[in-house]
Image (tube, rainbow, N blue to C red):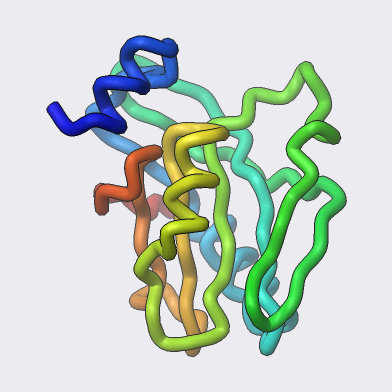
Length: 143
């Protein structure tokens, strides 16, 4: 077990366990449209969803105050209403890479258990999904 995973278990940050994840095609289309409209700036939002059996279902986007630029996007996570079931995040990279930066991985470890990065040219093939440790995972797109 690597050191980050060890610390996550000690501090209770290993969170929910799931075998599968899914997101609707309509929500993917919304993410692509927002990323295109935000370009050349990054955009960032949170995911609300739920765990049903062993499948994590991403249900909608949640927007909270933050800042965005060509170099990054930040979210004020203290502004998230307490009644929301935040399970992760999505943000764009206005470049061809959808790989997480060190800052991305640090953020992933702070909130949620599933994270997406969409990179230019902001189509479905340029979306990558990661767990809270920055490891690539699969997310099924459903109609």
